[in-house]
Image 1 (tube, helix red, strand yellow):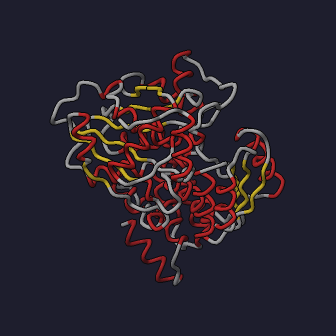
Image 2 (cartoon, one colour):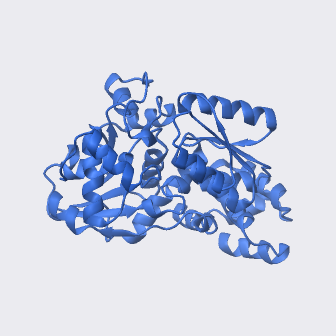
Length: 392
């Protein structure tokens, strides 16, 4: 019924594009939050039916709502390939499947959640987007804002590489450099949004972002031959991890454990779990800058603490191991990923944590989160600086 009603609205208004996705998104939100979300949609889209009547039409299964609500958002993030990796399966001794978010239009998984946040903002009348990131989140936000036709300003820390600044500008975003670390850039973004009335899109700590990242699991449900025995991912601020955990619950895979990889010097989740309290790192010293949130989301930390181990299994590796994994993966799969992604791959190459002693019939999924903060010259420099002379 949701899909049918979206089509009816399209015919009445003659509309195409992002507003259709915004309606569907608002409908799905209404089933979680009550009539208030659909009251908002009624205002945004000029619907004639009472919100209470419309909400009644959308009482359906969660997976059906999810599919319908993503009908338009899927045009912003790609449904990425998922396939069995022969090299990694041989190494781990079981069936290793790769979820290839490295091929998203903006270069990483970030487009899933941030396109959702931008589309919802546009559907509710946002006139501009403000966000903060010195990397993949900024690129995803700028890409999504351009697609829906909204001006966008991204606040970035001073450590942001020039190629990223150039890419942001190529997406049409305004770029403001502020502060030594992301945290300072984000404070400036919050102030800017409050002053100008722009809509603030957080790079990882926002329910709309988690909802978008959860699409990854729905795609796994469709593409895998069966329920996985483990999922391997990474954690910076925690938006990807939260999306995976949420998606697993929504498709009925609550029992699937998640191996969460970080690098030394960007391991805010691991430090927080060890101390049983939210930890702020003194500085980000890892080269895996995409994992570089000194303080992860409190909500996501509390979620991980609630679930506990082995449901959420934390594992930390070195920068050298992450780079060795990137180099090996490039040779084996002809795909270049950044060090943050290399941390997850290193967990497989090293049979780390819950990946040890896997049975031949086991199915393990690796989220190849991608990343735009790398090129071949950078990889070669990292190998030289870290004395990485061989592959796994």
